[in-house]
Image (cartoon, rainbow, N blue to C red; front, side, top):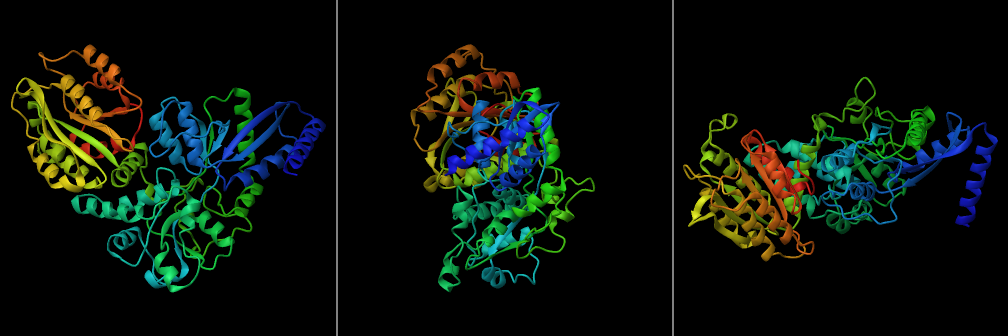
Length: 569
């Protein structure tokens, strides 16, 4: 029956195209997030019925609902890169002419990894605020809903101190609403050691009930009002407003309420991205379809699937969730030109901010093995004006302590130092071998204090990188990210060491796809040579080069390095 319906629909569409004044056919493929796909399909079919054409050529549109994470993996694969947290997409998933993901964060992440990914348009066609979803009885009891207004700082405190709330989220590497919630919590935590501890505590609390799929997370909410069920089920999670609307539409025994927390987090904005490989004819058809998605009819179609228009207003028949205020954050956070500002929690968002948030999540939740290699050459004594005059080594020690505090006990960490002649003629010296943090955290913490520059010491970069790579590969373990993270503020200056050509040749020979070792180099200050660093990283498995012109920022760069999986940045 389904096949008959598809063929009948195709014949009717063809017949209407034939009856119109247009000739030929431009076949436009659109992949859209599953919740918005029906509204786009409805609008596209109405357009076709009205004689859709571009300069006299008929337009046929195929709309497929695809999970954004799946399509992001397919786009990444086409550009020969990967995104953190995503595996490979099924071969059956093809990159379309137009992609409507649920959030611009997918486009930002892809652009950071793949320099050739430059889609056009990219403007939002819908919006769904990110809220904190709570079962109604729990919201009434735990946070005094609807009498009390909750902020992200309040939620952060609940996450780190309350034993009553069981919180969770969809893995932010795979879900835009989860990422938006993580960004908002990070901003609420602020900066400094205490803020870092609060952030780590919140991520650990969320990770305890994290899910790879939104549908799986929703199943963790209570299925009855029984006190036992309420106490053992999921209590709160950052989700989209549309998720809450769709969940309650099924009339569950325990409905969800939507908490619109201050400051408003980055909403889902459904960007309309025309893929870079699309030819001019299809691009013109995609632009024409885009115009159809700016009509009042499309706004009403969005309302029927629980979505708002880009300015945050809703079409006819929109079913606001329990807890939606008269003037929702989606509306109050909009600019006068109708484009969503995303709320103050989204201010200044760029790819590096996303990478830092995802780096924090990865450090806390994923198992890994890392050999941290620190430059202790004489130039590390240079003071850093933006760090109150502390030298580069002191700033690096601070970043190392902050990173160590993030890493969960599922990680194993080792510490090396390098300069020249640190261990006889060797330019490097092992301080702590790669050891499980579950039993060696204190030892590794103490080793950070040994990152002390050697006066007049030079930089034995090439020999050190080769030895570190061999060390991690020889002790390689499956099921974990095996990596070298090397911090340096200079160029190779070891006259008695190997040449760059020798290093590159040996790394190429050692590179084993069955035992991949990810190499990340963090360049400190302006004395590094980006081209040199990129050249020596290239032969290794996925990794990259990250430069911090201001050494005071290396903590942020370190988080980006953890989250980014391919390419040099």
